[in-house]
Image 1: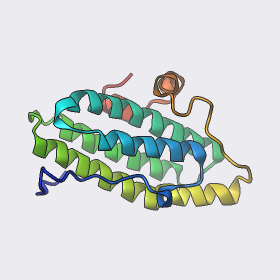
Image 2: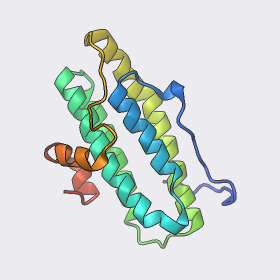
Image 3: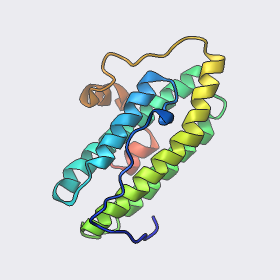
Image 4: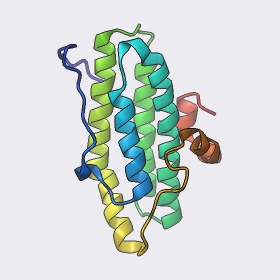
Length: 169
């Protein structure tokens, strides 16, 4: 992650927008929750929020990849590598031994927001369009879509590279 300068008085916050929707309810719900968690990052509760965020990223990536694999998405392997690269970059940032400061929290928030927006607006929207064209059925969120603890248990078997990178089992 690059060292970007910015005011600590004006955190880099991106709000969820309808334009981020990929038209797959569960994926959209999970993306929206990721924005909420990123927005919640602050120095006072950074350890707790980062822990929750990492757990949820593992669940989301597992869910999204399972949907891609099950549907036969042709760019599945490429998409999975993007998730792995993200996990590596976050693990490198978190593992560099630096103490938390307001600037470091903002740097993490900037990186997460920029990566998430860029990823959704390119790769996830591409998947959503492909899915709509090739799988002619609406996708609705599972009954536990916004229950991270229940999802975490269900996704445990699907955890791969990112789970090991983040030290999540």
